[in-house]
Amino acid sequence: MRPADLLVLDEPTNHLDVEGVTWLADHLRARAGAFLVVTHDRWFLDEVCERTWEVADGTVNPFEGGYAAYVLARAERARQFEAADARRRNLLRKELAWLRRGAPARTSKPRFRIEAAEALIADVPPPRAQLELRALAQRRLGRSVVDLQDVTVRVGDRTLFDGLTWHLGAGDRIGVIGVNGSGKTHLLRLLAGTLAPTRGSVRIGQTVRAGYLSQDVAELPDGLRTLEAVREVRASADVGGVELSASQLAERFGFGNDRQWTPVADLSGGERRRLQLLRLLLAQPNVLLLDEPTNDLDTDTLAALEDLLDSWIGTLVVVSHDRYLVERVCDSTVAILDGRLAALPGGIDEYFARRAAQGPPEPAQRRGRQGDTRAERKELARLERRIAQLQQREGTLHERLAEAATDYEAVTALEAELRRAVADRGAAEEAWLVLADRMDRQR
Image (cartoon, rainbow, N blue to C red; front, side, top):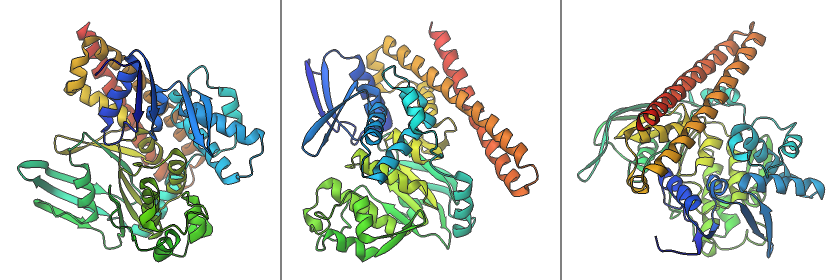
């Protein structure tokens, strides 16, 4: 709140919920003066930054634009100079394809060279084959994963959940959002079976092998070296049809040869987080429960993690304030609102529309009517983009249904996906109407 010509912010989004991150982005865009921010939050970078500096190999490399423009510039540089690291180049192209196809609004700034981006990603497939992965997950997990039935959870004199009923199915990839203290971590612990409800029942399927990533890293073996800690779980693993050794896996998670023999106790916070993730994935769970997995991770490690999750077979539940990650790896989103889980067919944009309908949070109230109106116009535009994407998706599904008319299994799966798309569009349109009506009344 102090007047300042320059703000220097080191990971300001850590421990903020999704509403806090959005408020901070709005505040920084509106204030006068310069700011410098160190962050791994890629959505936040795109929202607030006009230039990006990459610190690598003892140098600072400047790029125009936010994260989307930065990814394009790196991909172009790799192509122009025929970089030897083919894996990193492919990851960049895959990330760029996601930015252009999955979140086009992020790449609409004039400085972003759309033609160059389209040329780079012309032959890049979608991040994952959703129907195929879901079918494989159902064969590995069966129909029953976790069922919460009339669950109530109380902590002291607070009631986090009251009469919660929820079915987690095979192959579900769900992002969970909500304000700090709403019970997101307690929900993961219920699913993992490490927390007993105050009332109600939690039924976990017999074939479930849950892997739970907590927010702390206390479970790491500090007495071992890094590579030994990896081998303690598994000496090798199949990743996307390729058998990788423990050393190769460690390198993929950012541990070069010089760091693989470093004692675990001497690793930095980010390195300990990467090792925690690697050990969890090597245990080969079929249900992954991730609690704020992006904490302490850099953007390259996040891209590598997302690449692994794209081909991962199983059920995934992610609690995160990182909007980019949730949109990137999850197929659906739910929010904890008033002790219940609310499905968000329109994604995080719908969450903000619902919260706006309930009344603006306290920081937004202090901003005054002008700031509220600007945020609502932005939300309205986002909903319009979401509706257009869903309409396009429906058209694609109709075409695929026509092509697969003689394949009963394919038609059944495509019809289910089409019903979800239609329902998602209906919810987004309803949210748009509610917001538009409220803006009209305020005028």
